[in-house]
Length: 167
Image (cartoon, rainbow, N blue to C red; front, side):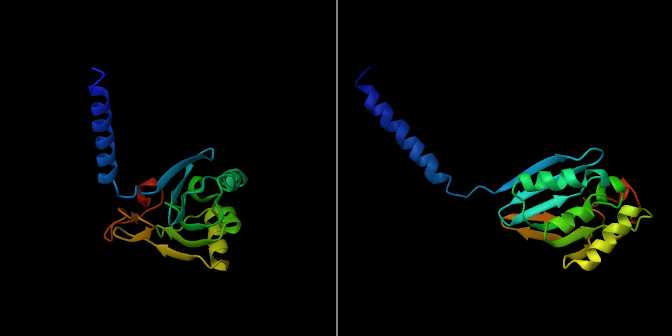
């Protein structure tokens, strides 16, 4: 049995080298961090091409959300996606947009009759972020990660509430 140990060792070593050589593709860099912001939620997507924030929780969570983003090393946001204008999704958006330089904001195009939507519109009007109403097929490439909108479609009647959310 001792005679076969060096041979077995060489076989295992050759197998490991062969497996390593076959896996020369670089893994995709994507991390999703789900942030507790009380009622509602917020998701931070971290890619090699930049950070994306999906929804910002209610107004009462503004300070908490900004603190959580800073503690994770976020300095800027490539994109903020606000799925729909309910207060528990956009209430913290004005503080986030003020605290972090942001390249683009995606919205579903529905105007809500609430203070959070009014503050959001005032905030984006004075910032340099590009605001886009997105529909199915719109996309953004961040590093090796492609974000693609699945809903709402062009022919969808987008209304307030969860049913009109960007997917």
